[in-house]
Image 1 (tube, rainbow, N blue to C red):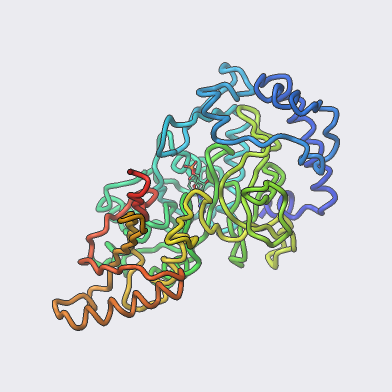
Image 2: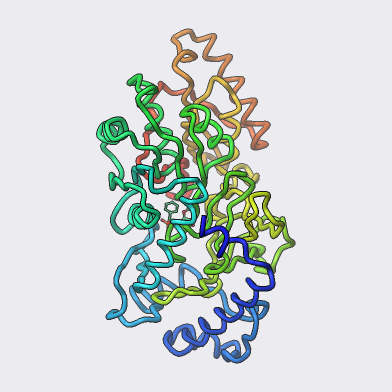
Length: 432
Ligand code: DLL
């Protein structure tokens, strides 16, 4: 594929020279166009001429979600609105959404990045791709849509919801690929099984992302649907989906470093961590025009490897995302990520990957209940059997997360199915 050879397999020195040139240009432009950024640099006694190479990036200030809120709605734009052709907004659940703007060139770059992702998954002009990410302010739908059209695939803009129609389209139009959140794919999978449609489905690949999911979940999806599932990462503040994705080797997500420069820092000290160590991903956009970002703190936790991948690509790889630093729960003093619960449940044959962690504080003590669904054949009215199963799940979860939790087996299909990003945690401690 043209994408791989020309752009994704650059020699490290050529890539570094390109990144340095692009960073210098980006900083100069932002210094001129974005007063907030200029003031931040001035406070650090920094001038664009101090930035000569990509290695100087550490001199630059970080950008955070708060900076975006302080400059709501368009204060961080580096292009006038007359050059902005599209607006999206982040899917933040608290406070005001943050608005992001794209020039025509930004849309072209975004499209190319998503096209690279699809090519990496062997999706091409002979494929029919069903886009079941939300269209609208969320970047998932339109991001995948433009990328799909760019490689010449036939794109079906389904958006989320209406599962019955999704399955009908999938069956009637013989879709070969689907793009949606992993939790929605799980739900679709469940319906395919329930309706006995396994033999009518022609899917060969799924492009899943938008929320954390585990390697165990990827393998479950692959074996149940007999397809290949790929992980796509991105965030609206940077561009949307297509910042990084995994190749057939599934040994980390290649980040498109010619456009997005990654750093991994310690989430508290903000100092760089050693290669391979987990920390917070910080991204600098090297080519974005509408709303460039310098050292944006994503809060996403991952590690970076610069070792060449066996697929031949030279772009750095990020390990599968463990979650966000703000998703981490401190339960009874122990750090717990929902992804650890998911891994443990997928390892047990009796449980399904549907769960809900409910945390409360009673008499100053954390109380944790994990609601779990089990495979239909294991759910019964027989109290003894359910108690044994409950004990088994409790033990597996204690081994995985290090604390004793109360497990509640709930009836099949009790936990809400998600069509977009799923809710895994209800933390009532924050509500009091
Ligand atoms: O979720 C963009 C996207 C759409 C990516 C479709 C992939 C597919 P936001 O709504 O701004 O943008 O949310 C970005 O979602 O900071 C991560 O915390 C999380 N996230 C996105 N992709 C992944 C992934 C889109 N593959 C936030 N693994 C990010 C883990 C992910 N977390």
